[in-house]
Length: 97
Image (cartoon, rainbow, N blue to C red; front, side):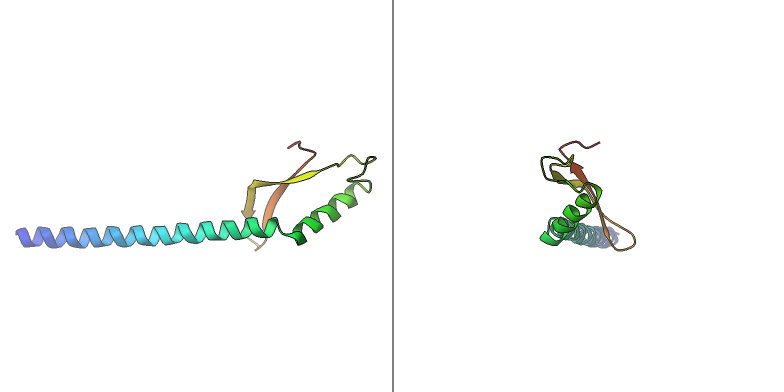
């Protein structure tokens, strides 16, 4: 009977360790994916696209005449779009509204 309990504990322990390793690998993959999205959003190409879009909304953007003087990417809002893209918000002139 003691051998049965030890065998059950061993099987349960191995199962728990396996689940923990699996969960750990999933978390690691998610964090790597999140870091890759942050790297892409802060790339030179994306910054050029943001400036282009802001200049379409305000042709005088980033000049003394324009309402848009600066922008900042809000890292907390970066998330994966189910259609395969990356969504994020831009803070204009330091005002989140």
